[in-house]
Image (cartoon, rainbow, N blue to C red; front, top):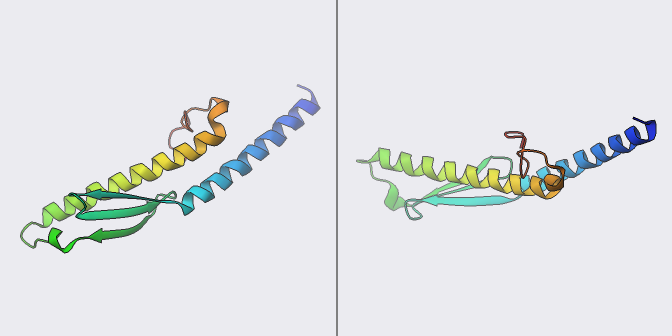
Length: 112
């Protein structure tokens, strides 16, 4: 492999890394919401997989059925995190889609 080709590959890799970092930052600033129990529990998360807020309608709070509320919160949190991961995968796929990298819009599972 020639030095020029190697230099070009290194430059392209660095540019790709910068684009991925920028996309991660942008996705981290975006939020998604998910609800359970017909909107009784709503959870907001960002692209960094952080839970930003949990809203619980007072009708969902039944001291005699705490397990139902726990299930609603867990379901909404899991759905919000799933949506956040999907959003991040879409953002990464825009950048890496043409590279055939598995997980990122097609490859490297768990990387983003």
